[in-house]
Amino acid sequence: MPESNVLSKNKSRDPDGDPLTYQWYKRAPNSTQWIHFSNAKDPQQVLPQSGYWRIRLVVSDGKASDSEEKEVFVQNKWPTVDVTYSPDPLYEGDTVLLKALAYDADGDRMTVKLERKVNGVWQTLNSQTNVISGGSITHTRVVAAELYEIRAVATDPLGGEGEDTVNFTPNQLTVTGMVNHTPEWKAMHEKAGNPLNQFYAGERFMTEAVVTNHPLKRVTVSFAGDLITGTRLNMTLQMLEKLHPLYHAEIYDSKMGSPTEHLKDGVVNFTFVAEWQNGIIKQDVVPVNIVSDVYRAFDFYRSN
Image (tube, rainbow, N blue to C red):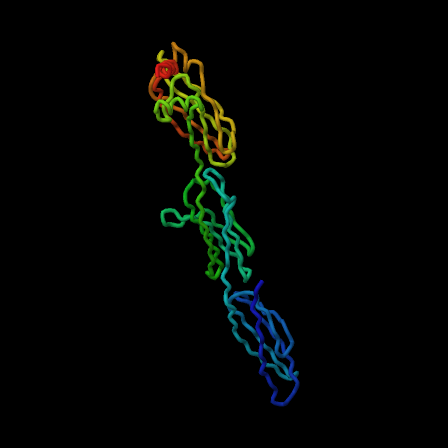
């Protein structure tokens, strides 16, 4: 621990030339106790505490004695503090650990605070008093995908203050769904000049989902569309990992292309849902258009 080293210069003398003895004492700030520390003429002494010290010298020639006191001010050394966060990188829904590690060169106990700036105002997350040098305080919270401005402040009993700041923005978790044709049907649609979001009732829907690469629980895709009978067809499948973070599933039901039940023309929806291990759930809804059925499509291609 850094300290103040004081050299005491002694100018005492005896007019008769008698030999002198010396006794040195010190009194710490805010103390009434005098402590003897040397009998040397010009001693050195470490004063480990900031504030006003009293130094007393008692000189004697064996017949008489005299004393004198001086005041010595030891400058307060301001504390320092380091603020960190973990884990890194962070994603929305993760639990962040904030830590403020404080030091005081004088060995003073400190008040240490962790704060976050919200709308331009510092708000206290955690505050503790009587923290020793080398001690720390922490705070945990679940984070969103937004900016976090964090500050740690350490204050000693004399008002000396140290601070440190850190900023971070957790990554957003996303899922993006896609509904594709089989290669054969894609070629037929391209030949007909149809956009890629147009399908024929009875095609197999080749679905894919790209998710943020963070520990996952599951990825699912749900289908919802109306049959020509007026019945609503719903189905949900768990998607399989193709090459993380890419997942896939084939959506098909025989009713979709049945001559008497098939999907009617219009919009059908695919809902892709990703659930991460930290509890965040995101979804992406992808609509596609049913513009005909496979039977009419084959008749068209045969006639053309």
